[in-house]
Length: 144
Image (cartoon, rainbow, N blue to C red; front, side, top):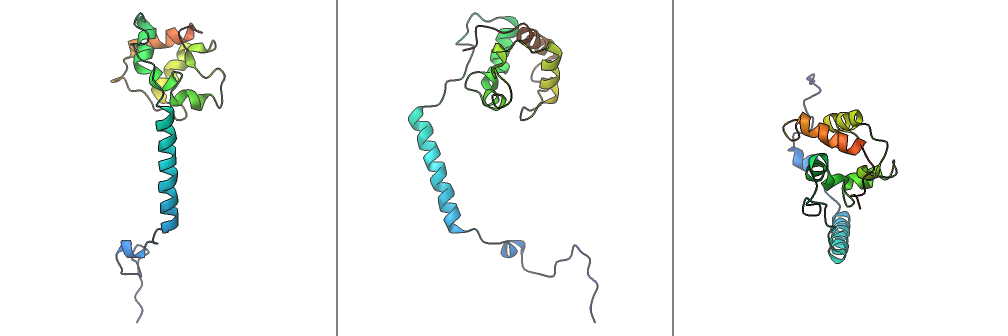
């Protein structure tokens, strides 16, 4: 007599680990080789130096907050700059002359593309307004 099975019941009683396909050793070796080569290239070239407050000791207000909270991604060596460079020129936020303060605030709070949302616990509304006003007044010569 056949038993009606619920779709969640498996016909195969083996543990899940035994039912999954085994990894192909050639791909594992190739992946390790690619990662090793990438690491050696980065080591040979040296890691890019991020923009910090040490680079701009006289920065105040919105510029100081931008360097503190945003430049690690949106500075010359930041991942956000590289990603923005695919869509927008200039990619450096400080060199742009078309950023509205309201847009900066919305993009920061909601996130945009690969950029995560910035919570109020990390950057207060007052600090974000200073950063937005600084960027909206651009372009700025401090960005290199």
